[in-house]
Amino acid sequence: MLDEFDECPRGMLGWTSTPLNDWDSDGCNDANEDSDDDGDGYSDFEDGCMRSVLSAESHTDLDGDGCDDYTEDNDLDNDGIESAFDNCEGDPTSDWVSTLITDFDRDGCDDETEDWDDDGDGVPDSEDSCPLGLINWNSDSDNDIDGDGCMDSIEDDRVSGRILHTLRSNAFMTLIIGSLTVLLLAGMVLSSQRGRGRYELADQTRSVEESMRSGSSHALNTPEKEVRDLSDLGYSPEVARAIVENEEKVRRGRN
Image 1 (cartoon, one colour):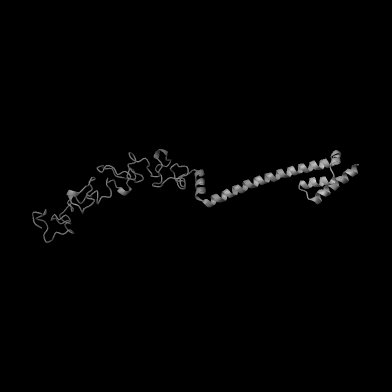
Image 2 (cartoon, helix red, strand yellow):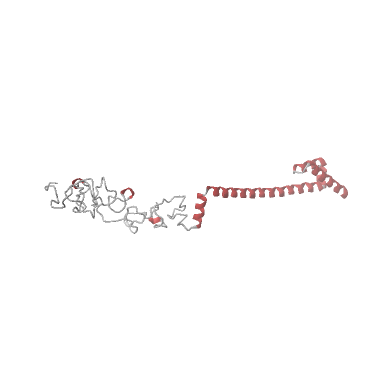
């Protein structure tokens, strides 16, 4: 390499500059002489892209990490969170770095000044009963039925919440409990109706029997009518006829 282009004209001997050993073609051996392999103005010790494909003149590097923002840099504000996952791609000149202390859910937002949802569950810190709980899950009616920002199955110690969550997450169990409830209610209704029917039938039977024993009623009722009345109450014709005949015998005995 000609001395006019060689930044190390009196450097190492016995080697030839190639992209493998002299990335920026400055005449300085990268491994032994060059502290800035790509010549972008950032030393290799602080350069996030030691061998940038672009020249220093065409670099756009707002966060000063030695990587071209448009082609090489996956963390434009240099906060430690890749741009694809950074919800607050902020000031590239800031020296703020995401840590578990400053950015609990690692979303690239400063919990103290930028982040309104420190654990990333979709519930604002002002309404979240577990603001520093499980991170990066979405609170909804299936996993957080009371919407308090605490995952029902892991964080929420409210018994009612856990029961409701179990029922809602297990359709088969819900179906069984619902069916048993319906059967129980139906049984109670039928039992009540049968009891009321028995009482009404007994009252009607007593009324007919009393009328049969009454002399005045007997004058108006014939044995055939009394049999029909008892049959209407549910007695079989044979039983109804036996009752009427028995009552007739009782009346004759009295007379």
